[in-house]
Amino acid sequence: MSSRCQSALKGDLPALDKAIQEVPLYNVDQIAKMKADFFTLNATGKETIGNYLDRTAGPSGMFTIYNDTVERGSRAGIYYRSSRNPLGANSTNYLLLHEMMHWILDGSETFLAKHLGLNAIGDQPRDDELNSLYFNSGCLDPG
Image: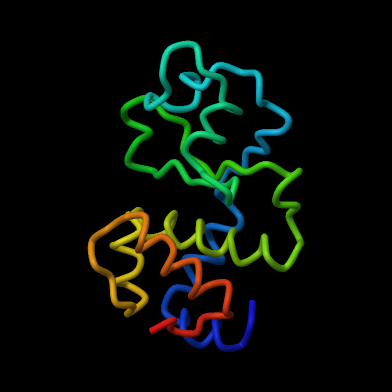
């Protein structure tokens, strides 16, 4: 993590450190053919977790199922495809940081953007892009 991100996220670092040790990571490349409804109640029909990730995560290929959905039967964790986002690659690390922040805050894209002090407008896809720009730039406000 860049020193700028360490400084910007200083208040979140203890929770991030804990999350790194505890958050389940699911490599969807290894479980792609399993039924998605085993992992999330938001799946449709006989959809596989691979199809679900491709449909919902978009080009990033990574998403988080938050703690609050566990009660409804979902398996909380961060889902990714190692073929798209090999853990350890710099771009993946910032994507993982983005998802880890969702995990510790248990919140939406808009909630995260507001937490980061960004100009959130309440539109989830636009606020997701704003958050991604922030993390991918090493925590510069895309203004």
